[in-house]
Length: 236
Length: 115
Image (cartoon, rainbow over all chains, first blue to last red):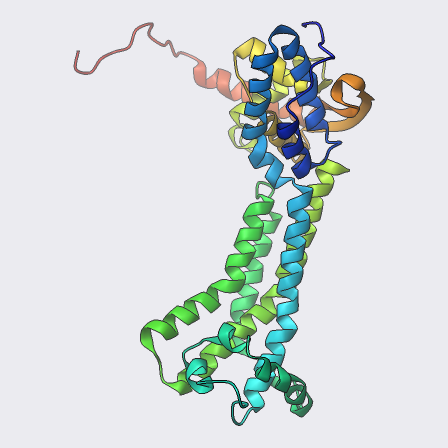
């Protein structure tokens, strides 16, 4: 083995990039530093090139085991969890409302065209959520058998993928996002292309929104558990 | 018993063999060097760790953290060793390959269909 060159250090930017993802004390960075010194003793320029090449080629693995991305993903999951009470309040409001509050332009038209995200930006509607929840006598408005069945199937599919040894964390996160939001996207496209009558839009909206409410908590739990496990494996 | 081919991939077999060649006590940098020196395979360190991690999940290797050294920037080495399950899987793969190679002689020159 070549003599070690202690004066030469790995490229700081490449090392920093990897350290940002997998942590500064990770043993993989130690392996790279060690081999870099062997190589730098022979040819420092080639050693720099080699180090950069190794870092870039190892990025998929680093991303998969990134503490930073795991934390960001946890934030995204928490944001999805916040969505659940908001959607429940919105569905409660939809079940009880008589007329759209003043200031909400073309409310009914936007509702029957499935523009829920747009309606949720209206502060006038948010102002009515507490009253709608107070007027709610039971929670039956939250029961929607088709959405419940679809959510159970989605959670079962996610769980099967979660249990697979070869499945990746990033793959699971993408799959969970797709399972949560696919009915919403498909429903929105259906309303956009077919413009069904208002009577049919109501149940469809209920399906789109309640599926999110049902499936987010279990999928978020699995995602956080998976992300934590993946990060803990590499970082103790 | 599961089919050997389904237990270990080609790179997994090579990694296990490298660990055994290192007296069953190798770590990332030396395994990478061995693969480069012996079979000319320049593996990304991330790909190697991904394989070792997969093998550890399958119970075919064990790992533990060693001491930190200055030439590693004060970072510890993660040592790996092949478990009994890993050795058995390797043996199964070897037996299967030996059986399949029996009676096969590859020509030294390519046969050209339109030659």
